[in-house]
Length: 131
Image (cartoon, rainbow, N blue to C red; front, side):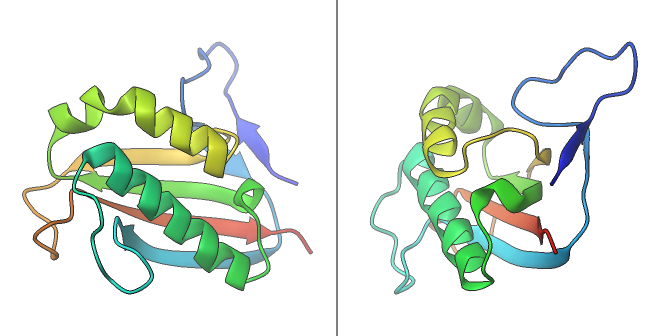
């Protein structure tokens, strides 16, 4: 069972947790980008790439016997902060559908580029599956 950490007097963050406490089997998921299982980009829109990256995270997590509720940390690398912010509504809808809850410690960082030229977002994730 994971517990979101919210120090006394702090306002609850929107869309993430300041920290998460849990115990169990740790699963470290490499950065996932918005291509399909055959390493093909089928969509170039930011929100669609983010959705596919989330789908990829869920698939890797399931391979370890985990579920989206076991995610405790994500780091988002985006190539364009404005494009990311403009797509937040669609990203949020995909996140709620695929992941479900926001009790996940998250960071988002704008980078100059990602290794794959067509990639607009890359997401690393960590999960802990309870014993």
